[in-house]
Length: 395
Image (cartoon, rainbow, N blue to C red; front, side):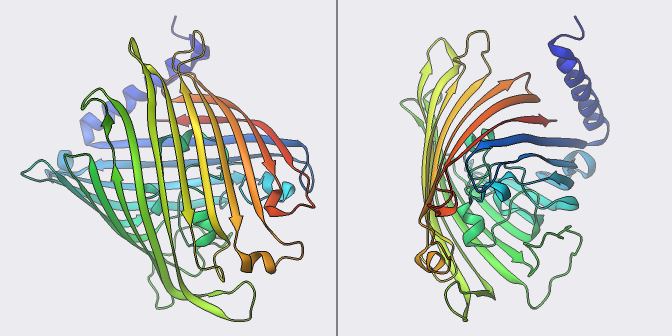
């Protein structure tokens, strides 16, 4: 039946055929990602509201080997269009309820050249140069992309509050180098431009200049990706430890009239499959956990952030590709930031439960529930309940 699964399979198959046909003929591959959320907080928070928002990313990847014979190279260019409101503005909490709550409007996103070199001893070395998001390479685990809360999808939110860290759909000039070993170890380093208006609501990504008043951000990360209890068919895991340093521009201190020109921080996190059905590798349980530390209390808003969660994949009867995710995250505000607030700010915690209904490999719908405790660390604001759904389309 050509229109089974509400016609989603038919549409996906035809788009995939068009993509593959174009790539085979030209070496170009067009991509499209759409994340949309409809969320409501029926109880708690500073006020109640219902909001819709979305992220739309589109672009193309050019296989330079197929086009020009340039082995191991590809060129990526993309744009984005984001729209909608931020439910957390009504709730008054720190960890945004939706990952799609980002800078709105049309914008130029990424444009970079990536070169991969296969070394004689089977290790690989990859360099990327151009306009990129830091979140492409640093501080993300596989499970993060399936959550709805912006508190951890697709990068933990404390990074954005404590530094000029960028993720979709914000990109600046940068260079990254990544070395991957055959022993499941990889090491990455990156240097990125930080323009003064990077957090402006009017950011559109079209200013390509590099100015003397721009800052910079450096990141380093080591990753171990083992298959425990079996080299090829064991329990897969990903473990990361990293750090960052930024400077080159002044940041207003929270609790004084002074400013500071740099700060730094660290993170450690991991995701591990702990059980796999021996008769069905798509039926498994995974856990994840992590923590971040930002020690410069005068300019960094959240000293500690911690998070943990569970993934139950393939447990719903007759739905072998669906997943259930349970997540907790907590953030403890810095003393200087807390002292600068009229009501103080101690800590905020969020528990999320979401069910990913995988219609096919390109489309999913997920009902979502979040419970936000002590929004923005303010005990005068009631705990908030968030319910809603997210639609993901990716080609």
